[in-house]
Amino acid sequence: MKVERPYPGLRPFERHESRIFFGREKQVDELLARLKDHHFLAVLGASGSGKSSLVKAGLLPALAKGYMGEVGADWSIAELRPGDQPFARLAEALLQDKTFCKAWLSPLPPDRGKAGMGVEEPESLPVGGCYQEEGQKNHIAFLAAALRRGARSLHEVLEPAPLPEGTRLLIVVDQFEEIFRYRTQAEDQAAAFVALLLESGRHEDIYIVITMRSDFLGKAAEFQGLPEAINEGLYLTPRLTREQLADAIGKPARLFGGGVQDELANQLCNEAGNNPDQLPLLQHALMRLWEQDQDKTLTLDEYGRLNGLQGALDGHAEQAWKELDAGGQRIAESLFRALTERSREGQDIRRPVKVREVLDLTKVSLGTLTRAVDVFREPGRNFLMASPSGELEPDTTLDISHESLIRQWRRLRGWVAAEGEKADMLKRLSEAAERHRNKQGELWRGTDLALALKWREEQQPTVQWAGRYLNVLSPHCASRSSFTN
Image (cartoon, rainbow, N blue to C red; front, side, top):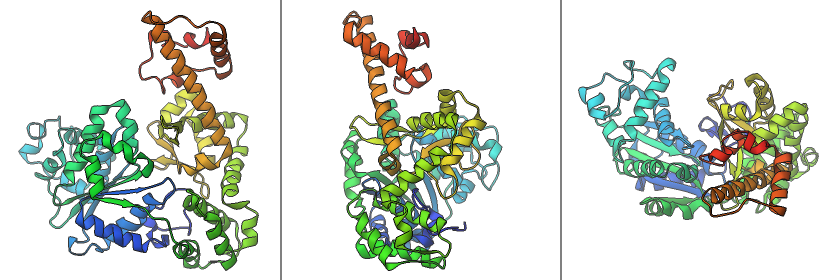
């Protein structure tokens, strides 16, 4: 895939952007050495430390070039984020790799059918090649069901449908911390998925790489065997040195026939300092400068008009916001509130959602929502990402491109705080209703009642919104009248 610009902006680098990925050569060599010794590799770092980019644009292209020595250069690679359907995401990622897909969908031996795999076989499986679009869901569901059978399921999948000789399978689980959120919804399934990854890493031809925010490290103890695996294959993403940072700033521009003034490079290195969001903010500012510059020689004077790294991002997001009319702004606020959440530990984090959930919340048409979303994901902006990319559909997953947007866009910080307060009151009401129903508490009176009535009037909560925070709505909260009467 052609790389069209030297700086990706706020989002992480992708595999096809390895030629503009500079400053991490030493870390890539270290990852290769670790992965060669340990089939399970945990790449940890703070939000904004560049761990996802290091794996996608550093490690994966290096493997494809054969830089892991005698292990070879033939790899099937499955990239995924676990989300709220980790087995389906894994199945989809595996089938998106042509080599794995061809092996899986080749003529089936008898023990690959219903009796052998313990799951219902889809109506049609094409012979050779990869799955056809019309049969995609069937094939994903079939493989996902096979993977759920037990910790050694991937071993069993590869027995009747082995990869070509000399080919290794690499599974990359990005944003692994999403599994901890999934655990609160489906504890057994989350544990089964982690067990599958750990056991798969014991196969001689399977390698596992996860990226995870380091502030979630303590939660690894929730899964048996995970702390031990992380200890064995831990790689803590280091900060870039000043020299490495200068390479990341200047070399991509030179690759595209441009340049970065020395004074600007020094200013950016100084300003990055100890800011945990230094890399995404830096890439975003450089992208902005490149897009706006005519001669493609980026200067300190030009940078001064962006109001610094933080100001560049906040101002750019505000510019997008102001391009919307009043209706579009209401949709955008609901959308970004849905795309973020405050964790139990008080961290403001991303929360990917399906388009259909946003449509339920906003009560607008798909076309109207698409127009609002496109303002934030147009080329040169990419504040939002859609998976799969392209036109939005009800099953499309929307996500914020990087958590630094939550921390640096002041308007969004305000929405996140307001959403947290709104959710807290809902949870208080739900708990009070449950206690009263069990004859363990009284109805609210006085100040509590006044605050609740004010909250209902100002926030106008709906059942669709409440469903996000309450797994099972009680009979007292199961209708709109509960919030409005």
